[in-house]
Amino acid sequence: MRVNTKQHPGFADDWVPIPSSELDILDEFIDWSSIASTLSLIKTDYQPLSLFKMMLLQSWHNQSDASISNAVSRDLVFMKFCGFSLEGAKPDSATLCRFRKQLVSKKLLDKLLLMVNRSMESKGLKLSHGKYVSADATLIQSARRPRKGLSSHKSNDGMYEVDEVVYSDDQDANWLKKGSQCVYGYSATVITDEDGLVEATQTHPANASEMTRFAEDIKAFRLKPGQKVLYDKGASSQANRDMLKEQKLKDGIMRKKPKGKAMPYWHKVRNRLISGKRFVTERTFGTMKRVYGLSRARYLGVEKVNGQVLIRSIAYNLKRAINLHLMQQGYYAQM
Image (cartoon, rainbow, N blue to C red):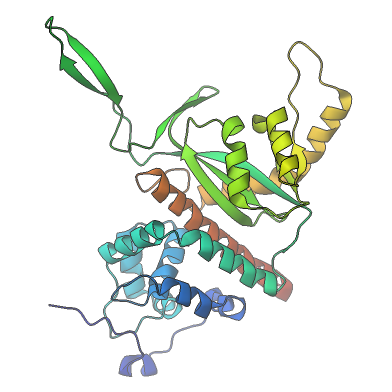
């Protein structure tokens, strides 16, 4: 039997008082109507904007699809934020999962991040034309725990020959050894503004070299000419510096120590100055991993993992926007 998915207020909504919360602040500077228009490309029984807001709540509280579905069904503040009626049914985990798949397949999350950032810029909560941007990569463990499996065939001489080594059904994930740590998963490149607010993301298998993918990522980010790109030594090469010049961007890549030679004094000074500005990106990574659960992927495949990074980035920017607004008012909301 089809459930009642109506969302307009009913009799119970008129009589049950719902307390205000910090989430109400978002209505002051986020253009939800434009976001709803973009999300109208997705067909679902519930309003797409309500499901998108559920995904934000899921990111802020680091919950599974089933957990956030239960939370929205019993928490009045969550119902109010998402725009659900007390009388109508609430989306289950399968509905939220299908909605997320459509967001990823239609490539809407990049556009939604841009729209959120523009709304923040219009209210003075985000820089629109900063002097520099900071980029860095972080490792994300696969949702699957790797278990080696061998695919083989029997040759004419009766011996078995190995065709392929398979570690899990997460086919896009791969291995990377960083120091003494071996990680099976992905590497996400995130670019932030001067305040650490996320501008764009790109995700690759973990073994994709930062040196070789740097040019691909920078071109995909479509940065404004004249901005300086800050990056660590992992992308330090003459080819990458030439690419920045071709894109009319300023070189902010830290320098590596030459083999067999001492690092020039001014390179050391330059690296220290760049590190003093790049900490905002590390802070962003720390919050998204520690609070939003980005240290491990929830989904399989590079596109879905990048979708996870994007929705976490949108949630991070919105929470920062709430905090910035409250700080102006003399209050502070926990990240």
